[in-house]
Each structure stands twice: as C-alpha cells, then as structure tokens.
Image (cartoon, rainbow, N blue to C red; front, side, top):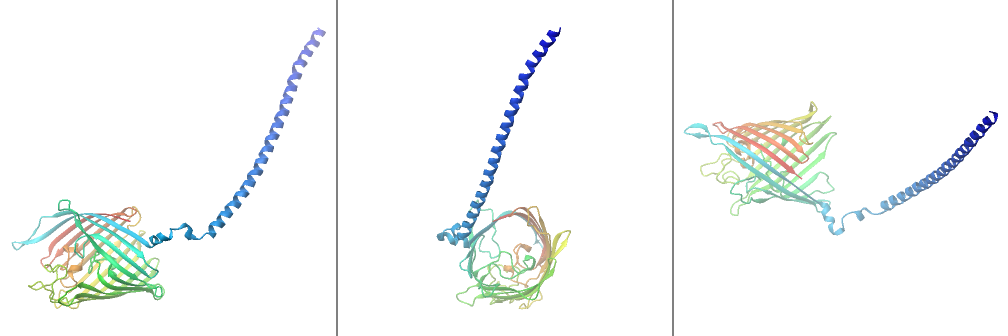
Length: 428
C-alpha cells in the first residue's frame, strides 16, 4: 500500500511539472511580445508627431507663397478682363388675363363679351462699367411701338413676336460728387414714384432724353433727392418738337427701428402739346380732352405732391402707406386733378413669403397725359376711378407668381371695367 501511494505521487508530479513549465514559458513569451508592440507604438507616435510638425511647416510656407502672389494671377487673362465689368440680366413673365367691361348700347349700359388672352413679356439687358465714372446700359424687350407696354399677345397663328430696343443709355457718375448720376439716351424713368404707383407713369415707360439724379445725406437720419430732366416726346421736321421738362425733390427721414417717412413735390411741363395731335396715337386721346380734329384742347403743366411712410411691423410683417396728388395747372377745364392712396403688407422676397398691395385712385380727364399713364387701369389712359388689388407669392428664388384684380369705373357714365391678371415671373 505504501509503495502504491508513492507511485501515485510520482505520477502526479510527473504530469503537473511539465504543464507548469510550459505555462510559465508561454507567459514569458507573451510579455516579450507586448513589450515589442509597445516599443513599435512609441516609435509610430514619434513619427506621427514629426509628420504633423513637418505638415504644419509646409502649410505655413504655402500660405506665405499664396499671400505673396498678386490676385491677378488667379483672375481672368488680360484679354478677358472686360468681362468683369459686364452684368447681364433678364426676366420672363407669362400672363393670363380676363377683361369684362360695359359699353353703351341703345342708350343703356350693357356688358360686352368678356375677353381672355395669354401674353408674354421677355426682357434681357446688359450693364457695363466703361470706366470708374462712366457706364452704359442696353435692354431689348418684347412689345410693339406702344410706349407703355412690352407685352405680346399669343395669337396670329404662332407668328414670331416683335423685339424692340427698350433702353439704351450712358451714365456719368463723377467720383468728385458721390450720389450724382447724369444719364442720356433711352432710360429707366428717373422720377421717384411712391409705392411704385402708376398714377402719372406706367411702369414700362422708358423716356428718351437727358436726366440727372442726385441723392445726398442732409441732417442725421435724413436724405434728400433731386431728380430732373428734359425729354424729346415727338420730333417734327416741319414744326416745333413736343417735349417734357421735369424736376422733382424729396426728403426721406429715418425715424428709427426701420420706420421712415418720405415726402416731396414734382413739376412736369409739356411743351407744344396744346392744339397738336395726341401723343403716340393720333386717333386716340387716351381719355384726354380733344377737339373734333383729334387735337389736344389743353396744355399740361403738372404739379405732383407725394408722401410715403413705411417700416411699421404688424405681427412681424412690414406695413407701409403711400399717397399721390396731381393737378394740371395748364388745363382750362375743372377735370384736371387726380389722387391715389395705397398700402402694402409684408414682402415677397424669400421662398414661401407673400405680399399684399391695394390702392384706390381717381384720375380726371386732363390731370395727366393719358398716353403715358397706367395701361391696365380702366384699360389705359385717364377719366376713371377704382380699386386695384394685388397678391404676390415667392415660389422660389427668382420665381414669383402674382394675381392682380382691378375694379374700375370709366367716364362720366361710370361704366364698369374689371380686369383679372395671373402672372408667373422668372428673372436672373
């Protein structure tokens, strides 16, 4: 029994000792491997740190080199530098409109058959800085000879549409007199209109002649503007020309918190109009008083008063009001005045934003030259009164839709005139 116990002890020792030896040897090898890996990691960290330092030095050298290189090296070649001085712009408007109006039939007012039509307006222009003080502008547009419309009706069997020269002008703005512009040619109307109303001028009118605009700061928060010009209306080889001379001045007062008030006065004097054929269309007086031969009965020397307040906030939306009054001091009749009041709410600028506008006007027969007044109100011209409502929605950047509705009365008979316009406009 004793020998058998000794034998079991020997066998157990023989089995445990090699196993313990093997495990100890493996543990030693594992420790050596970990130490080797740590050494490699330390070496990589040193290399990475050195790489980051080298990269930083390279970046600093590159920044220094770029700063030392003149900007012109990255601009257009000298042969194409003139492209930087040119700006090309344009717009396209698609319009559907429906017109309902009354006419005198058998001494009774009755509605005529309504008229529906689709119209387009396309314009493309170019402005260029010739020097630091001289610039030019050219714009072509769809339209006819009508001075107050660049629309083209979609009809006449898919015929091609007319393209006309809408603007062509030079602009001198001397550096010695900031805010001064002297403009010559066929130009955008230089006279300020509150709320962009069209009591005197249609928005598409581009007068032809020589004009000057000057704007400068006066007292703190005040700006004064002065606009004036002389324009050729009708050239006549056998008689004196019909002309227009105008002067306008106004003051804008910034009250604070974005609120402003503006007021001013204008004077417009038409030369050689009385006793002459009507402007643009000798067969149409556009509401103005004419004799049996179709000649103007009155002269047109127009005094205008205008005012505007804006910047108020209603529920976070901007609100503005404006008004206009005109009186033709050259008329021999009592129908020589006109007035307009209007308001705008919000601003259609960012995608999804909207704007609402409203105005009411009363424009007597000889208050202004009918050929140059709003071509949509009462169908164009003078001798009418009524409402204009407008809603705009900014669909996307440079894409806008609008709905305009005019509810007017025309002439002494107070004939009803209604006009609905739905627009889609895109510009660049």
